[in-house]
Length: 155
Length: 110
Image (cartoon, rainbow over all chains, first blue to last red):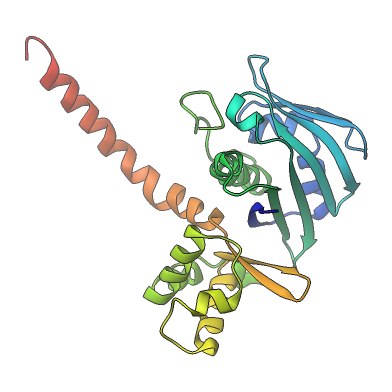
């Protein structure tokens, strides 16, 4: 079956442990993910969801793998826009590798269909999220405060 | 590894038409093998490999091994950083000035 995938890589000057905490801490996520609240226990089998500031569920799924501070795999289905929800489940893998004073963070997001509107939508959002995450960890402040004037991360 | 964060390397990687073409090819169709990319460029396989290596060291291309295959993906994250650092901040005052001009010209008493 056809598959749509994107692979994003960023290098962040931090430690794998700190990056792992940042990726799995609700308060921290809210800061770099434009106010999204994430509720999850971060253990395999636990449910995962992203809720916007005004209470709408944007994405939900389940943790498939959690190997701190190295690898996190999330079963991820969009919930907010019907045409994106209809595409079904995707899989997001986050890999953290020590890279001499920095951590290489690789985000691989795929869905078993091609083309995919969902992958197109999230591929636009991820660079902004990663950019904020990097700034927050390296300098303590976020780079973009309001990248989504419409209030919708799936622009 | 320090080179990974080198802005000079990033701009150097962009300053070549073949490398920009490789990025366009990946943008049109991501996750390609070396052979598929070679078909579109009039140069040796070794030449294409060297360009891809430079793009990868500048973090503009990410590679993933799938079995015996090596797939190349466009990584737009550094481009987004260039946008924030070198474009957005210069754009803002101009856009603001344009918006003010439009507002002034469209005023009913203007």
